[in-house]
Amino acid sequence: MATTIAPYFTPLLSKSDYTALVRPQTGITILVAHWPNDSTSAALASALTRLLPRRDFAAFNITDAYLFDVYALPELATELDVTFVPTLMWFIDGVMDAVVWHPGVSVEGESVAKGVERVVQRIRGREGVGIEEGSDSDW
Image 1: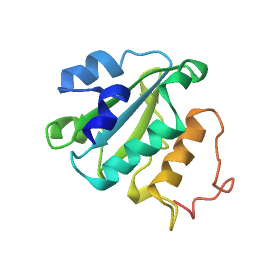
Image 2: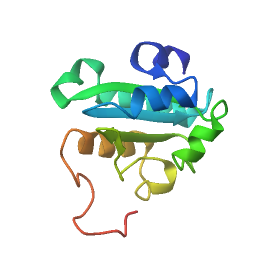
Image 3: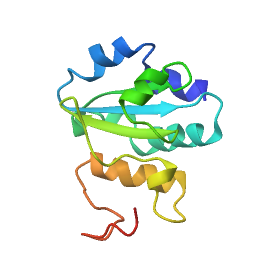
Image 4: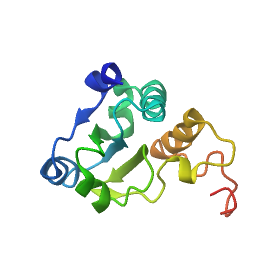
C-alpha cells in the first residue's frame, strides 16, 4: 500500500497531527484509518484514489486526504470511534460526517470499491446514492 499512500495521502504520525491538521480545516477533509499491508486497506486506498483523484479536490472543496495507521495510533482510533479497519471518514469544517465506510456498514454484498464509491458520491454532494431514501435496512 506504500506506493498508493505517498502521492495521495498526507500521513498523520501522531494524535497531535490530527488535532492540528484535520480539526481546524474548513471545507471537506478526508481521513482513512488503515492497517499497513492489509488487502482491504489497500483496496480502499486504490478505490478512493481512482474515484476521487487529487486533481478533483478543488472542485469539491476538499482540503486534503489524510491517513493514519491504527496500530501506531490506537488512541486516535479510539477517539474517532474506529471499530472496523479500514474506515473511510470525512469531515466538513472539522466535524465528522455520520456516513463513513467500513465493512461493518457496507450494504450487503457490497465490494470495497462500491462502498467507497457510495461515500465518494456523498462527499461530492450526491447524498443517498445507492441507498433507498429513508431506509435503514441496508445499514
